[in-house]
Image 1 (cartoon, rainbow over the protein chains, first blue to last red):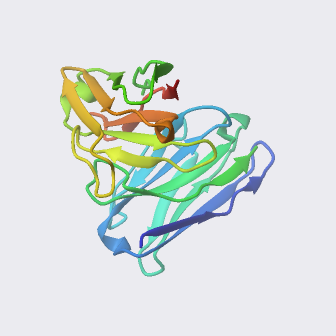
Image 2 (cartoon, rainbow over the protein chains, first blue to last red):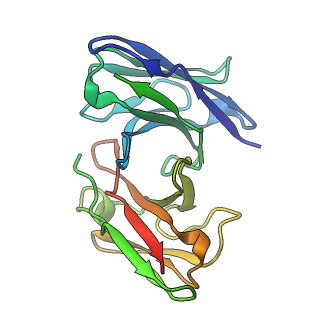
Length: 116
Length: 110
């Protein structure tokens, strides 16, 4: 069974930093692209970032480019999101997602709340 | 990266069929057959319902179907059931090597 478990969320001051983690199990982590998606309280889903299976390719939403960095450790089956220069508008539940076919997110974690 | 346009809400009675539209541009929905749909119940993580326009993952009811014409994709729910009441989001790959969600649609079962 595919499992994705996010951690690292919490309360941070504006301008501060936070690193989210997503522990993966139940599939071959090193084979799949991974994504981060966020959802502000009472709002819709917003795509944040994605990374290729080998970690060499990454893309970001305009709103986080230059402030957030996605990375992965395939030996530890873990996905990361380093968030710097945090703003109030970054407050959201952050979900990690697995994309085995590149084009869609097939599995989601339960989310971790970041409050700025 | 403007969000794809969806109706705010769609309603129907049990047993009826409803259709949710998702309108983008030739740089996203119209340019690729990479549209997917997600169901989200309150306080829960999203769930994939349709991928690559019209494919259903295993375990998803065949009451859910997807299609696309030009810059607009659609999700149809037939035989509407109370458990279908949720928020639904479309999602598309874009020409800028990124992805974009729709604005979201609340499905109300009357």
